[in-house]
Structures are given as structure tokens and as C-alpha cells.
Amino acid sequence: MLNIEELTLYITIKNRTTFIDGTHIYNEILVHMPRLHMFNFCISTDTTLDHLVDHLSKNDIQRTLNNIKYQEMNCIVNYGYSTAICYIFSLPFMFEDLTYIGNTFPSIVFNNVKRLTVKDEISFKHDFFNGIALSFPLLEELCVINIKPQSLISDKWNSNDNQLYSIIKYPYLISLRLVTVHIDYIDQFLNERKTHLPCLTELTVNYNNLLIVTENFTRDTIRLNCMKIKKLNVGERIEHTKDLYVFKMQRGTLILEDDSKFDGFVFGASTNVTGEVVFQTGIVGYTESLTDPSYCGQILVLTSPLIGNYGVPDEKAIDDFGIQRWVESNKIYASGLIVSTYTEQYNHWNAVESLSSWLNKHNVPGIDTHMLTKKLREHGTMLGKIFMEGTDPTSIPFQDQNEVNLMIQVSIQVSKLL
Image (cartoon, rainbow, N blue to C red; front, side, top):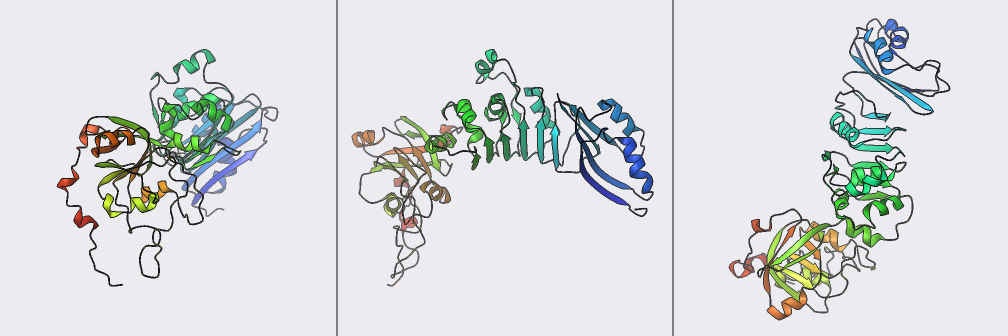
């Protein structure tokens, strides 16, 4: 140990009668390593109050660290009703994990921390989470443990959807765990008027609490932060899978050339498109229709009551003559798809993926909406454009398909002799 020049140490010590402090660092480590010139460490003492002999404050611990002139150090001390935890660490903080910090933490930036757990027996306010976002700018995974409500019930629900708070941004957060929490914290993170989570893909939460906060998956101010969630852990079987899927879907709008609007939910690609809006009542399936070159440049309206229920077959499968077995061609020619009711749940022996994933792969948007076919029957085909929620519709001009050379898009480029 006398020859050690660099040392990295991350350790948790449980059930001690005293906190590890600067005096321990000096007497137990530094004096035994005279050649040590780089020491990155985070040492935590996790114990119960009845074990502790001395209830030292942060200032008490910090003084012992300041006595060491070796390098800059800091500490975090949190006391609960029955537990206590103390961190001492070198600066800058070099580790990716930090667990069980509470309402009190130093106003420094932890640039390397990606995984964090916050826990306290005193409620976390909105400003606390704003401080977390500022101090942990690259945070990717967050777990919250706190069963105390944020505010009085009388003003909690009245303010949920009003812009009373600054919006906290967690630009890199991909995983959020809200299990052992008061319901207020679910609203704190999922409500877009309080928090912005552009990259959230995994959510762990109590399902009944999620139902309450989302108002049975109907509350619009929760939709944005849930839109990209791919993995939802609720600890029980979800019976309302359709409601949950629709809740996560982005809103989209179809505008026709007569300025009539049809709002719906987007499945497939989240992209803006224009085209001639036509409807189809044929008996062929949606995979055949979408890959039919005759629909090139058109936004296709399907009149079947339910779309997506049998999924999508392997589009690359060919028959003995080298022709696509299950589709009309090797690409989707329709610009967009409009349906009455879409389901993500499919069941067919030949299916390999959902309709939504297939459309997304080909960059084709779909909208789940109603009342359109009747209008097209009365007025004939019309120009239309599909735009995503948050897009200025005037920025997307209508495009007359008669002015586009569609023939070159659908013609076979290389002749094939069968």
C-alpha cells in the first residue's frame, strides 16, 4: 500500500455507531499511502438512529474534511425519523451512481451521475426537483421514494393543469421509478406543465395510482411525457391495454382543402404529409391496399370498422415466381392512412409485426379518426394534409398530385422475365 499512487473507492458501510468522516479518511487511508496523488472516493455510512452515538451535522462532518489539505471534498448528511445516512466524497464527483439523497444536498454540479435515488421522510417540493435537474444535468435513471404529499389536498388538484410552476427539464432521463411514493410525485413528473421528459422510455409505477393521475388515460397534460414509453412496469396485468396504447399516441390532424379538420391519434410514423384523400371499400386487406402502386401519393381512408387486428406479414417473402407473396409490391405507396379504429393488438398466423411498426418503418403516418368517408362520398376526392401535434398547418402546403410525375415513382426500373 505504500506505493499506491492512484486509488478509486466507492463503498457503503452499514450500521456503524459513528459516521465515516475526514478524520477516518486521514488516519485509515492517507497516512498509509504517502505516494498517493489521486484519490477519487465516495464513502457512505448508512445506519439507524438508535445505533448512532453522535448525531453530527453536515457542518461537523465538513470541518473534518476541511482539515485535510490533500484535495477538495464535500459531504451530504440526511436524517430521517429512524435512519441516517452520510456521504463523504472527493470533488469533482467521478461516479455514475448516487443513492438515497434527501432534501438537503450541496449546490454543486454532479456531471457524471447517471443513476440517482432520492428518498426522504419530509415531502419533496417542486423546487427540490428543479434543484435535482440543475445539479444532475446528465441524469438517465431516477428513483423517487417519498410517501409524504407535496401539498394540501385542497390546492393540489385545483392547480394540476394550471401553469403555476416553472417547467423542470430532464433532457436525458430515460427511466423513472415511482413506486413507493405519494400520488403527488406521479403528477409531478408526468404532468407536462410541471416537468418535461423528452426521452422517457421506461416507467415503473403503481397501476392504480397511474389510473388516478391519468384519469383513466384521458388527461391530456399527462400524454406528452408518456408518449415515448416503451416499457411500463406496473407489477400487475394491465387489462386496459387499448386505453393505454391510445393514451401514449401523439395527436394528429387531417385538414382538407375546404378547411375541414379531423382530429385523431397518430400511429405509424410521426411525420407531416400531403396528398389526395381517397377512400377504399374493397375486400382486399390493408397490407395489399397500402402497397398497391395505384395509391401512390394518396392518403388512403379505410372504411373497415377495425384496422390492425391481423398485423402485417413478412413483406420480403416471395413465391416460386419471385413475386411478393403477401403484398402487392416491396414498399408502401400510400402517403398516409386514415382509419376509424386502430388496434395495436394483432393475432394471425402469418403476422410478424404490428401495422403501426410497419408504417413507421416506411415513414408513413396513420390517424385513427371518424366521420370522413361520408364527406368524401358527397364531395369526391379532396386534397388533404396530415400534420402532427405542435406543427403549424400553414407551413405545409397542399400538393396537387396531378402536378407530380407519379408514373416514374411506380414504374418498374428494371425489367424482369419470368
